[in-house]
Amino acid sequence: MRHRTDWSVARQGACGSFVVAHAHAAQPRTVPRPFGSPTLDPVTTLRGTLPPGSPDYVYLPFEVAPGTAELRISYTYDKPPVPPGTPGNALDIGLFDTRGTALGGRGFRGWSGGARSEFFVRAEEATPGYLPGPLTPGTWYVALGPYTVAPQGLSYEVTVTPAEGAAGKTPEAVYPPDRARGRGRDWYRGDCHLHSWHSDGRRTPAEIADLARAAGLDFLNSSDHNTHASHAHWADAAGDDLLVLLGEEVTTRNGHVLALGTEPGTFVDWRHRARDGRWARFAREIRRAGGLVVPAHPHAGCVGCGWKFGFAEADAVEVWNGPWTPDDELALAAWDAGLVASVRGERAWLPAMGNSDAHRAPDVVGLPQTVVLADGLTREAIREGLRAGRSYVAESRHVSLAFSVTAEGGERAGIGERLAVGHDTPVTVRLEVSGAPRCSVRFVTDQGVLFTGGPLPVSGTGTVEWRTAPDRAACVRAELRHETALGPVPGAMAAFTNPVFLGRLEDGKPGAAR
Image 1 (cartoon, rainbow, N blue to C red):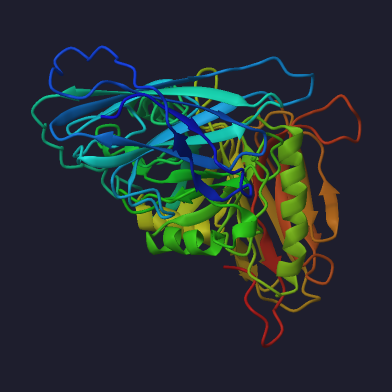
Image 2: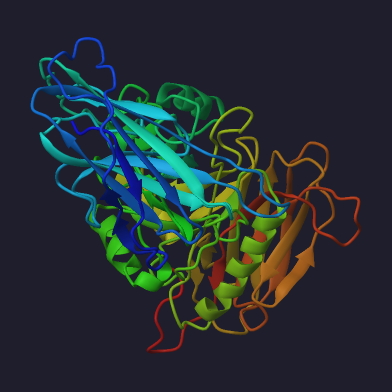
């Protein structure tokens, strides 16, 4: 290993570029060797200061000597006071091996963001969020991600401590099965945005699975930030009663996106911005791995959370994220406006989803949950149901909906489908509800809210019908809202459906319903 090296960024570079920091000479300093490592070089300490406007990612090379059995890496950085409303320092960290730091992640060995101040990697095991595997001698890289930098700059210190020993054996990864015991074609409940201790969550996969079962879920999707390290740790948490899909929350500086239900072991790189023009490449990678592309909380206000890549590559969009907030109201309105182009047949519509984004207590797994009509409880069937938009979103297991539109002639269409009848054909919109006491029903069309029903009884069960025709409503969806004390202001969401499309499409138009 090298002696201490002081590091500084040689040039600021354009934000979003990949810059390897360059070193300048420093006097070597002897650091006590770790116990059990008498023949390895001393600890390496990497110091530097990142100015405001630093590159998104800075890579600090260090040497791994032959015979290294463990790398233990820790870091600290300063957090100076800043004026009110000014972001302070926040620094993420990860690790790449001798295969390098090129975009695509061949050398990727783990990422913990800002959730951990230290981690280790060995052949046989690693800190959650990191990948066990060979400690190949050569140049490795600590990856730093200055999430925000204070006006005074960000000074950091990274310590790399090697340990000598016999190389362990890397375990063969065991993944959860791609099917569970289902009920045939039925409605299945799931939460597809969850964080474990493999990123910035505080729950183990087993704890999340227990909470998912308690919430009445049939399936879940693993979505740790910028790492697939958890994939090999879900097998014991799955079971005949719970299908575990594997994925990642790809957390870029221009928004977050769920890679939902990808093949086990799939890693999706996050180190790109909208202006780079690389997003379509990674969206294709997600689909090639069998996954869905789902922008998450697209109107969230946190730094880097707002979605800026557009929706041309999306398969669905997360409209409801955690407890209902104004961000969700904005996301719902934007998604609803996007349906107008779909009813005209200009493009395929984008189904809406809802997920908890639960990290730790008191976050509630399954608040909300997406309820999808699928042919069975398999990875393929659930993905197909979500992609087709045969789904609704509910705040808990207690809320159940049955929503359909029926024409006078008996033709019928359900959520995510098209009722292809003449423009003046009378149709009946019907919603059956249970588990929503005192909630009001709204039917929303491409023209806005055209029907509002009174509050449901305290039993939470009821049926609401409304008559219309395709020339008055090209699509219709249902909402359940809680009571509010603010008069015409809508209450918090209890549930909403994806739309049913009404009327025939003109010849030559692409199909709006999936």
